[in-house]
Image 1 (cartoon, rainbow, N blue to C red):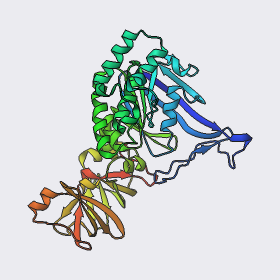
Image 2 (cartoon, rainbow, N blue to C red; image 1 turned 60 degrees about the vertical axis):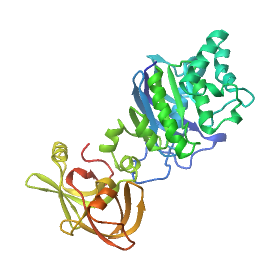
Image 3 (cartoon, rainbow, N blue to C red; image 1 turned 135 degrees about the vertical axis):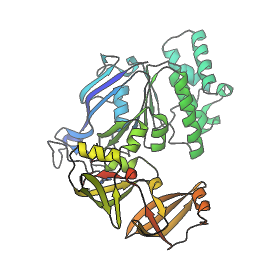
Image 4 (spheres, one colour; image 1 turned 120 degrees about the vertical axis):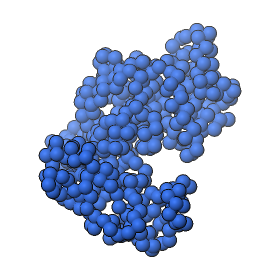
Length: 401
């Protein structure tokens, strides 16, 4: 059990062989939320992989670092573990500065993506190994190993070698080897990425159950937003070494800070449209093609409090908030490109004036309306309510924040 504090933590990888950067930057370049490629800052000192990372983690909290490849999440985790040096800033564990403390003295355990099990050892020996290094008694080692094995439901595999186990079973062993130490902090670096979809779902449930059974603080790294949304008490969304937003899963889904977060969190991805924000008789409206949408009272209040002026905007609407309309009145016309049957719902990809729009349609609503399916090229109309609108300025920032 432990609380952690990361204050202005930065990681700089020096240029190799005395190589100088082609173009040094004294300050971080502005973040373009629409830019997908990795755009890490380059300085005279080297490549900055993590930028001014600030985070307070409470005791027993489950924190998830999420973002695309190269965003700095694994580097941040490795700095917490002591496997990477901290270039600038401070890391505290229970109010103790640990920047220069050896990994073995931080009371931290880490589960790697590759399992990292010893192939010549049995499951029991793999799990007991870190306790033997601590010179614990055989009785205490046996007690801890068997308790962890029971928690993870791998007691029946204790005498097997790793090669005789499935991927999911190996990952349970790797987790078991970490928790037998009863660490203050348990770090997990994309532990489920090597598993198939069904096993990932099962292991997510196992990790949730494990979290209820052991008293420790979790820091979990993933690029999978589903894992982030289902596991984390709070999510830290990263891009190009910068924190984009910190919040609960519901907060970052309902109130994304910028276009990057809005597009990254949520599946299918949020729809984005060019639109205009207008203010009439003290109220805000969005004009989008043939539609005029009055924003909800909550959004009205936030925009008024922020003193937002009428302007060109990027309008964001999640696919499950887009509705099929019976007529073209205050609705937009589109033609169906692709119809994906997902069981309880259909994912429609439609073309609206050259712009791809994704609409999620409940199969129950289709039955109620007598719709049996959608054909390529079929004309449809869609609309959405003012409470479904996310309003971003042209720099990608959420105007409601």
